[in-house]
Length: 397
Image (cartoon, rainbow, N blue to C red):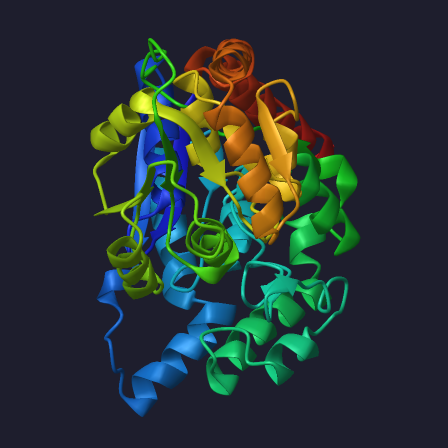
């Protein structure tokens, strides 16, 4: 099978970029021909001129350049499937029409909530927000300036969402959507996406990092240091409640100064900054448990599957994909989102009960082996591609 992967890379490399690269490598490793059409947000000027800003806003809704590039890539590589990942903002949903015009089935992975939420997170003002869900035009997002705190930029994103709802792009121009979790699938269906075209395929971890040998002594947080990731809850648990268990924090982001300040106040906190993936996995293999205190839905955090692969139990928020991936009392422990006392109680439980930490970790490893390996993911991805091809054939009669 020949696959054309279309992706708009982020300015700061993140989980989506890593997933795209991993899937491409997975397909190539199984003998498929993979072509890549990649746009890069680093090409966007930090301070664009008014004309450039206006062009970017228009292109966010319908990029003629993006559509033309997709059609040229299809004619060059003759793929059997076009697999769209992120198309925001340089490619735009016009890519769906370009692929359809060339007669190629389209699969799109819904990595985030951008097609239904200007902020792409369904999160605002410290809480889950679904105010724009199902609206033709997401005006609450514009009113709250949900994208980068800018009315103009939020309006541009909202225009993209509204126009393509009116055009029926989401309903008619994609043969199969890949949602990463049940909670994500439910949200997109509530927003009007066709349920019969949305299938669930989680992300995977490859190569296998290997299971840890013993429960470590420290707790670990890995992720972007932002409010929605629950970093403030994490810091309150250690600073306000005086926890003495060692805590390693890995990551970077807007709350990095607060994390660094907390590390100066509490000798139990060690801030390691941003680490490369092999270093992160080594931290996981040495930890007692991963802490995942996120306060937003999360489509699918790869960090959780990396923990499962390492045989590391997870203390996770009872919310969104985290509550799906981590089974309470089996592969980890659930906590109430935003509750520092609840987090403290579960940390204390695992800190003083090594046997439970070992049992949860072993179960975590078994779940990884059954569900989140490259082999399992490959089989599901190929099945989705075949479903998309069948849908396209049915459409053509």
